[in-house]
Image 1: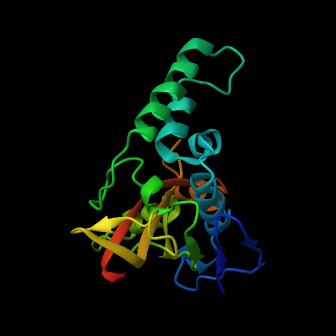
Image 2: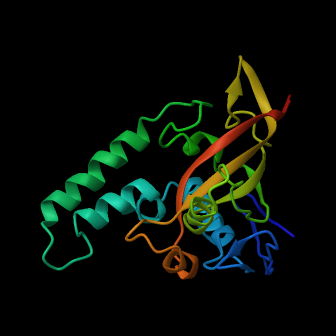
Length: 206
C-alpha cells in the first residue's frame, strides 16, 4: 500500500511495512524507524518549501549539525546559524539536474502540485561476497521508491525540452554513522534523506 497526496490535499493511510529480505543478525526483521514516513515528511516539506524541516531531515545537513554540535547547549550558535543560511541559499539556487548525487535537486522533483505515491522501502543489494559489509550496508541505508505525477504543466520538470507527465525515483535514506557495530544500526530508528535517483526508463511525457 502506498501514500498519495497533492500539494493541497493529503490522503492519509496507515500501513505496516514488512521486508522479508531485510536480514540483520541472521533473522528477518521489519525496517525500524519507518523510513517511508520520513520520506513522506521530507517530500511534504519540499512541497511547502519548509526548509527548516528539510534541513532537519536531510542527511548532509543533519550530519554537519551533529558534528558542529548544534543540538548541544555549548554549541557556537553563530556557526550553526551560518551553516543553516548557507545551505538554504544553495537550496534556493539549486537547478534542475537528473544526475545522481547532485544536492538539493529534489526541490524540482517534488513541486507543490505534484501527486506523490510512496512505495515500500527495501534494502540495498548485497555488495560482493562479504557478508559483514552487506549487513553493514543494510543496517545504514535503505531505498524508498517514489512515483510522481505532474498535473500542473507549469510546475512539471522538463527533460530534453519536453515536459514530464510522470516519473519514478529511488530515494535513498541513510543513518548517521556513530560507530562500527552493525547491531547498533539495525536498531537505530533515525533515517535521513540522502537523495533520489531518477529512473529515466519510467518517464512519460505530455
